[in-house]
Every structure is written in C-alpha cells, then in structure tokens.
Image (cartoon, rainbow, N blue to C red):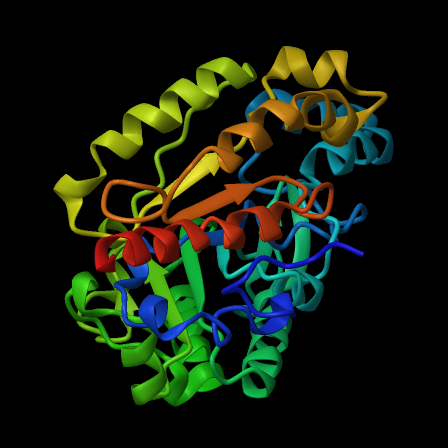
Length: 323
C-alpha cells in the first residue's frame, strides 16, 4: 500500500479539508490543485449527431461513414474514463467544461461535449452537488469555457440552473488574493464558477474567464509542451488570477489518421505520459509556481496524488523560514 506524505489527508475525497492550517490560510491561487481536461467525456452518445465543435473534415467523415466514423471519434473524444463522482473522490477539483445544445432538438437542454454529445449538464451538476454536500470542506472550480449552438435562452437556462443547483455554495466574485480555504469554509462556499461569456456579466457568483487563464500549447510533442508550460508560468504573477497549466497533448488530423485503430489513449497519451508526469513532479506551488494542473486520463497514473503532494513543498518552505 502506498503511504501518504505528512501534511496531506489520508483520503483524496477530503484532501482540501485535511490540509494543515498553514496551507488553508494561504491564497488558493498558490495551492497545487489537480484538474481534468474535457472533464465530462467519460460517456459519449454514438447515436447522437456529430457535435458542433468538430472541424468540417470530421463532420464530412461522419456523414460519409456514420456509425463507423462516430466510433472512431468516440476513441478520440474519450479523454476521461472516470465518472464525475470518481474524479472528485480521486481528488480532482478543477473541471474544464464545454457545453452545447443539440441542433434540431427542441427545448433548451444543454449537454457536455467533446466531439460527440455526452451527459446532460443538469445531471453532472447534481452529481457534483451531491459530493460537495457530503464533503463540506472540498471546493471545486467549474470552468465553462466553450459554448456551441447556444442562444441567449440557452445561456439564461444554464446560468439559472447553476444558481439553483448550487445556491449558497457559489462563491461571489472578489479579489483572487483574498480567496483562501479558510475564507471559503467560513462563508460555506464550495463552488467557483468561471463563465466565459458576456451573458454572465452582472451576476456576482459568475466569475469572468480572465480570472482563470489556461494557456494551451496545442502540440503533440511532449518537449514542446513542457517548454510552453514553463514559459507561461513565468508570466503568471502579472495576472493576479488563478492559473491552469494544461499538461495535455492535442491530437492533430494526421495524428487521428495514424491512431484510428488505437485511439487517443494508446496512441498519444500513454506513450508520452512519463515525460508529462516527470514535469509535474518537478513543480512547486507558491508565488510563481503551479496552481491548477490538468491532465488527460487522470486514472492512468497517480496524477491527483502527485499534484496534491506538491503542497508539502509549501510546508517545508514555511518551516525553513521559521528556523
């Protein structure tokens, strides 16, 4: 059995609540937080129409080959194999969310999307809320950063849903520096929603996207990725915001063609995971360090544990200062 480092709780489901007082008093933007990329793609609907986020080339393929092409796309769209509850229990606290209506479907229903259509957003939010109600000291970042086929009425529907589901758990906007776990616990806030769309302006519990920059390397090469992550961390302090390091390799059309038989998991991720994980292990949180780190396939490694453990470096730094 793996032993947990001193200073971090025994169970990832409650890791934030188990942090020592020195860390719960620190700005949350200085704490290392594990996140997942395209967090709701653990279930995609092969029989649904192709999602509106697909490039014309892939839409053409899907029309030509229908279910066969969709099965190929399922392989590339499935970036997370764990359900929402499982990701939360594993310690994931940041979720990268892309949402869409289903074209030609009546009503205002919204779905999570990455390639094909996944779960209804309402189901995912209820699952998160259920977890948070049982784990009162855990806090999640919900980053709604891509919207497809959504008109004003869809945004109103989603914004209303977020407020109805989470209610008083939603953190009101304030200076990022003032957000510590102690502050959130005192206010009983457990959800920070970032809504990258003008329709959320004027709603105090919807934070603008510029408070959580997530620079994207858009590369299939692990060395280029780690170089990009280093460069963007150096610029971090200018922004006075949370920060997402996307430790993610992006498939290109020719990568998709080469990897059709294996899918993203085998072709792109598993081969390069050691490089990405060793970069993560070499990081430190704090002033100019990492904050939120996202990865594909969070269950392939001890990813959440590795990120959470980085916070021990903040403890040892503080102890050295007091000697």
